[in-house]
Image (cartoon, rainbow, N blue to C red; front, side, top):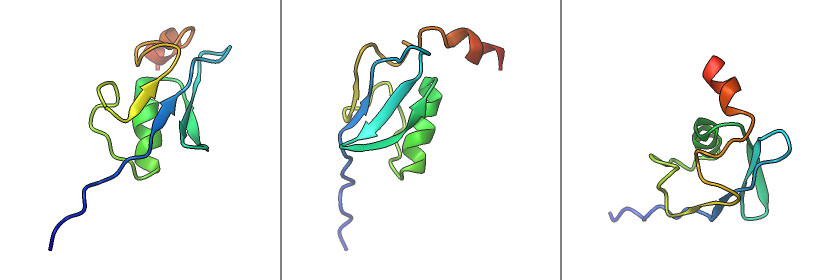
Length: 80
């Protein structure tokens, strides 16, 4: 039996909103709202899209900044 290669939809991490959070979508579907790179991993995991490195994945498009761009939110995440 041959294993089918896993096909991933095109995932977009949208530009930061006014509060610094970023919407994560796959096609026309909103998967969740992320406030940190770890949130993107969790959102994808919950959608059964397992990605080992969201920062380097070929099927994730980072718009309006990369995986380290969370304006106004990085200080809050470091405190928790």
